[in-house]
Length: 252
Length: 200
Image 1: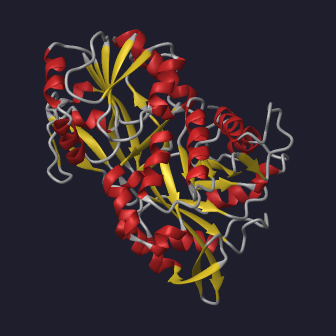
Image 2 (image 1 turned 90 degrees about the horizontal axis):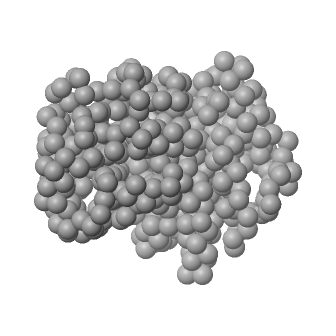
Image 3 (image 1 turned 90 degrees about the vertical axis):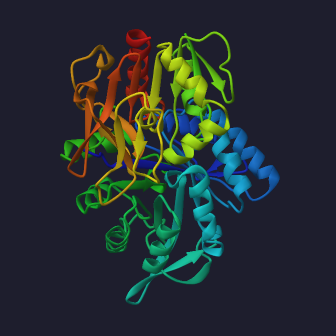
């Protein structure tokens, strides 16, 4: 049977991990290569690496680090953040990314989804979506949540799927950073609508939150602040989920 | 050992080359025409569509050399799309395969594709699975599956959305896997190590 994926998210700026993991016994927990290798070795099922690659310098720095990480990370790596051209996608994939995640640029220019899918396969095209509840529906935002779009969530998911999206990374802006649990109604809505894998993001604050999302039918969970505080590690999370009878890749 | 890794533009090779290095084997990238001299085996990796793959193999003049290597019974390991290319044809855009093995490539019946993530393999007793258990999980990412005519070459099967499909095919000197050993952590490393020890 397909096992759910537990996916730590690295936030990287100018070659350093921001919101770093302070309590891990790493040589340098601000080094994204060290941290990605640590996550892979400790039982992560994938790694999402969010970086800013808008300028030539930023892209070069990111591709250099990703190439270093690739030598040590033996699980899939998704890279995203500020991608605005096929050339950037090509550079990231060549450096060793298995998938790229595109958010704002995909909304501005939806055909990029199909272009990436046609050239490298839809499996490497992750469309990242930030959405929040507005009355009776969910609305899509871009630019890190600063800009409202005209897209209702369901309409955008269907449009992106038909363009060739291979996977969605769906963040609830209402829950992001709150550690109040995943936005299960929004995730349920999204999964019911599209025929692609959906990674749940935003709100994980405890093992209870993860267990609740898995029992609700989610099968890919992004972890950010829950790991950054250093109170929980992936081995502790997976051992506890396994103990509660949830199927996870544990022990490795 | 020295492995030729076929580079035909279908997915990056970084994770595979890194794993070969960790296992103290040499991966030599082969991207065009005549194979570089001196090799013990060929690895045919790749993700994506069979039609595009076949076109790329043709364009890079890799098709004839691959057929020749197979005629000379050089061991070939197919990974994901590489396994699918062993067969004759695909229903995806009428894609052609290398035709090493009788059978076709068909779409998964699942509601949610690709089949993406970690899954287990129900395997037949074989030294390829030494040190692995029925709960050992591998990383998969694919929307199509192989349908071999000869059931006896299927050594491992995997279930996704109630459909069982072949995930390990053994037809020496061909071995093919639908999963990605290079993205499957310690389990993938163990499997590839077994492959080198037992099949090459």
